[in-house]
Image 1 (cartoon, rainbow, N blue to C red):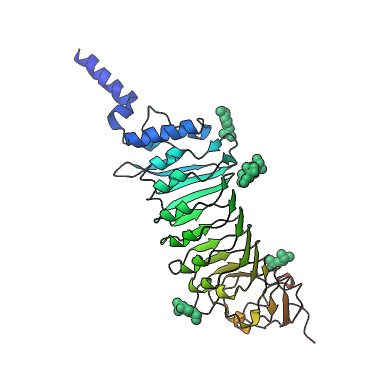
Image 2: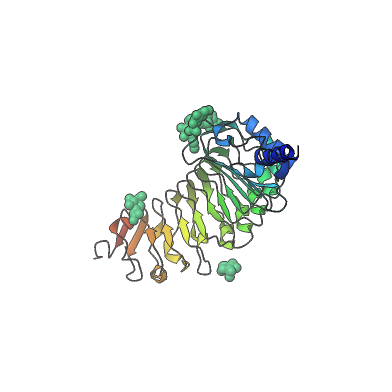
Length: 332
Ligand SMILES: *[C@@H]1O[C@H](CO)[C@@H](O)[C@H](O)[C@H]1NC(C)=O
Ligand SMILES: *[C@@H]1O[C@H](CO)[C@@H](O)[C@H](O)[C@H]1NC(C)=O
Ligand SMILES: *[C@@H]1O[C@H](CO)[C@@H](O)[C@H](O)[C@H]1NC(C)=O
Ligand SMILES: *[C@@H]1O[C@H](CO)[C@@H](O)[C@H](O)[C@H]1NC(C)=O
Ligand SMILES: *[C@@H]1O[C@H](CO)[C@@H](O)[C@H](O)[C@H]1NC(C)=O
């Protein structure tokens, strides 16, 4: 009898790990199963078996002590076409989430789910390479712990909400490759310094770049392939530490001669604009410049000789009004 009991106990240990050692919070487990159901039981979530500990499931992470779900990352390295539907409202019921990601899911559609506003512990929100549409919602400004906000490569439309500048901890904002219109908000100059890296390229943003951006010092700025016009000199200044600036393929028109460039620059791409004036001598002091392109503008005068400026090819300089000197033909 004792042996039989013992055998039964061993069997229980081997085959019922849940009953004895489940770490997963029951509320979180219920919510995850609801999410799986709302997404029509996609193959990606096949490991989400109600009989096992949800802390062991794919695509989620539990906190090491509280065992609450802190991360939900649904991504596919190849476009996952099996996966279709909208972001389920139940994602808003995982109150300890710090990371939420949906990536490379071409059949993920609908808006940015409003219940995401409830996830106030969120530090990282990535929804990229999907077909979500509608606006970049204002409610994202309530997620004051956000450090990384990446909504790139989607089908989002409408203007950029100015409220995003109220995110005090934001390190990186990516809204590139959508169908966003209107101006870059003036409020972006009031991001807490240094301000997040701003990648807003491949949209239909228009109007001037706000002068207020002189107040921030982001590591990276990519406003390329929009319809921005006027001045861009506020992105520079000798006391900034910005490393990458790409404003190529816009309608920018300003005098480059007077611009003071931060010596921290690694990349400067101004190609395809309507920029006038001369290339300032100060650029010869930018010692770590790796990428440089001022082609297809209206620049004139002699290219300053020295620093790294002659390390770049003709095609960094060609198609200007009257630029001359190495690597272009010499001035007469
Ligand atoms: C799509 O789903 C089916 C079953 O539902 C599965 O056999 C197939 O491997 C899935 N395709 C991918 C790319 O995951
Ligand atoms: C969005 O859907 C279209 C049409 O189904 C598809 O061609 C495109 O690749 C999708 N976009 C993304 C980013 O997956
Ligand atoms: C992109 O959004 C528009 C509406 O804003 C919609 O008409 C279009 O079908 C969407 N594209 C895809 C591929 O979902
Ligand atoms: C940099 O210079 C600008 C304009 O001269 C000034 O407004 C700003 O406060 C300076 N920033 C720092 C960090 O010194
Ligand atoms: C600079 O931009 C022009 C226009 O897009 C391009 O043809 C050229 O190859 C670029 N040069 C470099 C060095 O990237």
